[in-house]
Length: 199
Ligand code: SF4
Image (tube, rainbow, N blue to C red; front, side, top):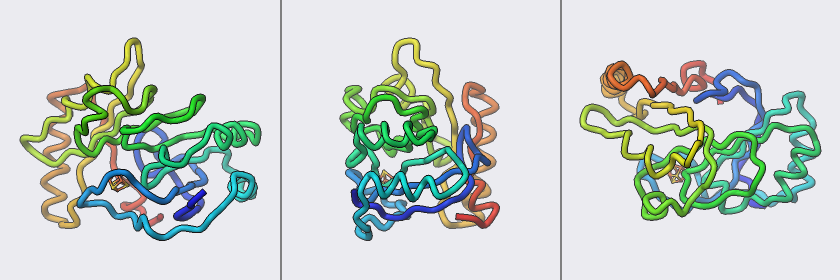
């Protein structure tokens, strides 16, 4: 597998914020978002066994598989091996591609209403929908209906977009909170790892 990086940290965003976890960042993505901060070209080859061994060297038994887009590489056998080793497997995906079965927690962060999302052809099971909010006029509701399956319990997280500009970020945060107050099915998600100065 093409692995961009592995590291131990706290989950910074969403439902599991503050949870100690081993991060596996797989290389490569099928989208090209202008604000993407991941270098998709850099990677090392690791076998599934090497990944499980590396993850198991640490105490946390929560693994977060992210990217890039992990669905491009993630296999059923790696998910099964991680379960056998006692891991709770969380995957962060843009939602455009199907994932293996049995993942314990799927966080979908759509980066636009792509054709596959609109047609419901991407990921089938989602536990958490994390939408980046760009400010007044943005409409996060448009992501809910294509992604919410029949009977699916879905946690909805709204996260202010990090523009890289402190003053603009302050305004977007204010607007995000105001939006949530008017649409209380959403909860606020912050990039707490950035606030804490950790990876
Ligand atoms: S979906 Fe995520 S990883 Fe892929 S280009 Fe967009 S921001 Fe980057």
